[in-house]
Image 1 (tube, rainbow, N blue to C red):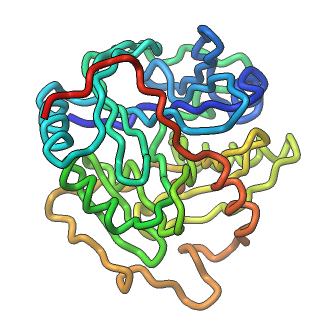
Image 2 (image 1 turned 90 degrees about the vertical axis):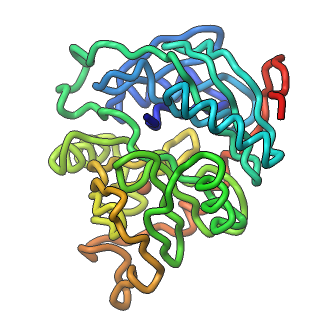
Image 3 (image 1 turned 45 degrees about the vertical axis):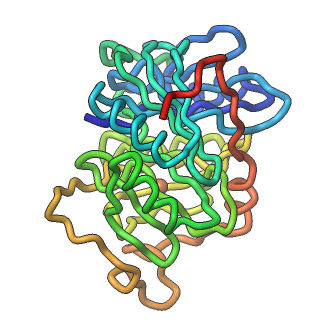
Length: 304
Ligand SMILES: [Fe+2]
């Protein structure tokens, strides 16, 4: 068992960012403790995103929940491959124990066992539950060498590459087509955070809600090739690129790993619909905002 759960960010103005995500984006309040503010969705994870107050912006970790067997396997292989991997106890809602693995370009992935879930959301102060993001559907990173990182996460984490395109390596950790992807960007950073909406209408109503608050998509709405999800990307006022998305399609072991030639577009098209422009420059700037920074807790290095 392996599920993408949450991403943990540090940034200045964490409280304001948290309020914006509730009032405008449509997340629900997941509480706060010690300068860290939590946002939840309508589903059963205690939170999806945390914002820790800090003078600088960075990604603290991206968290997956998994079985004890998977955790043991990852710890063993990570140690054998010489990757940094540290034991951690989560102080975030849901708790849990596990490890943080540092990938080759500094990406910090946290794997937790025993993290608890909660009852689905009962209400939201402003919005109907059908308009609240359910969970994260994917977190995408920029990479200097996306190909190498794709192979590394297959080797060490037991993830599988679902598709390779000219721009991205899409990776799955369960039956969802991708829970993460690595963009061939030339540098390592957070590319974007995608929130899963109930359906296409919920994505479109999200776009309307953002329009009510004078925010236009930086890209979208559109429908992607790999994953077949409907999307709308925004540059959040506090920095990162965030996305409303429908669920990505489901695949199984028989899914043939696509190559870039399987995913080409007609000229001037970059999605299935071809109805929207993309703010390449604005997105690129936003994608550079959040790099990775280690915050090792005082825990022992795992034995090889
Ligand atoms: Fe996405």
